[in-house]
Image (cartoon, rainbow, N blue to C red):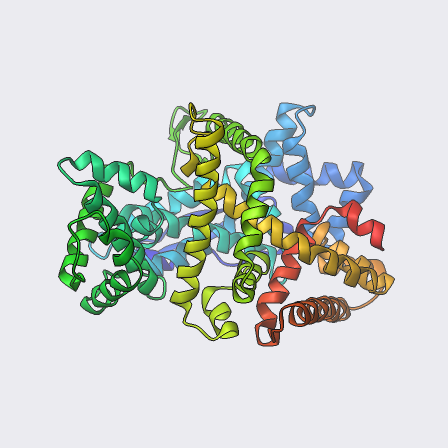
Length: 517
């Protein structure tokens, strides 16, 4: 069977020079053997003779350092084109085995049973395209955090991209209509509902609220976005009647509680409208370019530089527009914080990033109540901005106020996290010198744990233990601060607090850390 065609593992000396070659026996069975690229072998020998550091890495079988070496050559435009192309081939050779393993694993999970050979060939082509794209290899490499073999890391990255392509073609996963509906903004969905024509504004509002109600009680099952059940629509209707009916009922023909059938009808209208919107495109969408031999080889493209520039300019404009409103937001927020539970919800959500269920456990309410409160807070902040714009700039929409809603969330996160950062800086300053340096090396410089252990002449297990102890100390001090200032007991959420601490260390400027070491 085609899915069994995987080459055997290689010796280290083969990983940067050998490619898999498929052979077919007289009986029709296929098997692989490794074929050495003579040009690549000569290039390796040349680097060993001329570069002592490279020679040391090669003798020590340091795959990570060698991979970085060839990435640096590829990215160095001052080098000759021939040398850069050889570096590109070395990178492709290294990915040869992990790409075959990735194809095998994805084929076992995602394949067209009516045409398995086509699925196999398609996945092989996708993996080959990625192996021949050094810029993509560089992206994968920079995501490596240790803890597993480097080849396994690349295998998992390629598996992820194949899965992405499968979901894109089949409409599953994040390309499901339900995932798409969940992540479509109310502004865009409202526009698409209006394009359907002959729909009253209050009915559009009902559709939007029905969508919010549905996703308050419904989500994906495992990794699948299964269609909502009748029970989901019943729960969504109950949620709508409790939280949205009083708001929409005024000034509309909607006076009575809605049924599950009515809720489903409004959701279906949203789905119909959504089909008018452009479909999402896979991050690994294939773009074609001409190969040297004239064959079209589609390399993966993660982003359009021109679109990225436009998005960056728009983000800067929104940030600049939001600057004069910071004081207004802070004033409105202080009003919302008048009630202690509101302050707790805001801090736990936008400061520590805890989910609604965890927040509800702390204040003794259901997670849907937490969600409703957060939506209320958000509406209040948006409304205060809207009033300010209408008063001071009636002739402009301030880059469209709806477009600033995401910026308000970012501002809330910045506001509450800025209260946590001094606590972490103070806790960091109380760590001993080795602990601080280990954290800096592992999380800021992203140094491999093996390299840290070698530089300190200790075992990797000792480095891991020191890191775990340091993170636990930082987490404990942060938990203690939150508990004492808000009258809580969030120790049961230590894992989530630990994840926040790790994220903070990765993002904090190195100069700030060095000032505290």
